[in-house]
Image (cartoon, rainbow, N blue to C red; front, side, top):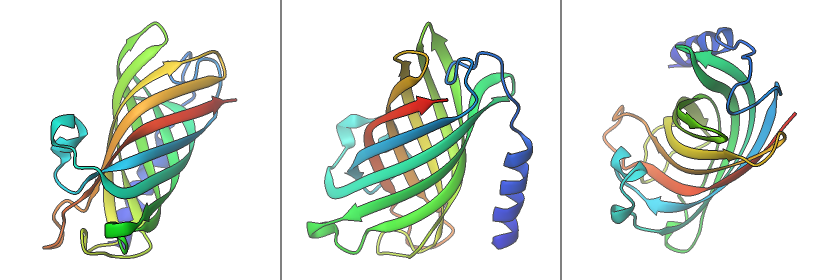
Length: 184
């Protein structure tokens, strides 16, 4: 398992290239973004795009992300280093976790200062719980972003964490929220 994660990290760190006028960066080369989200319950990846099946549960997700621009199959993208904390409270006590991961976000559609895309990457959690029985999880993200000016951007996002059914217990974690980022 450690070899797989190490191989993925090595592959992803060889991919970045400073992209000219990347929609998510403009002429900047770095970004720090704060994500805050509310849990939309356990369940499948479909919760990313089907708000009608969201089941808000007492969990709050916070992620700090450092990013650099890159191209992924000629699409504007960013390579991310993520530090996350999920706070479970009330009926979700015991579902909190800390994790670190790397991910790639790719803008699939662009219009002026707006962009929409997908992200994916591996994360290593500090514990196992009653929803997911593994420390290695994968995060999948759907986002819609807007560049406010040359330095600031915001995104609406949904994110799903699960282990891809590596274990019998894999209910997954789902969150929806807002982020604000500073490009420099």
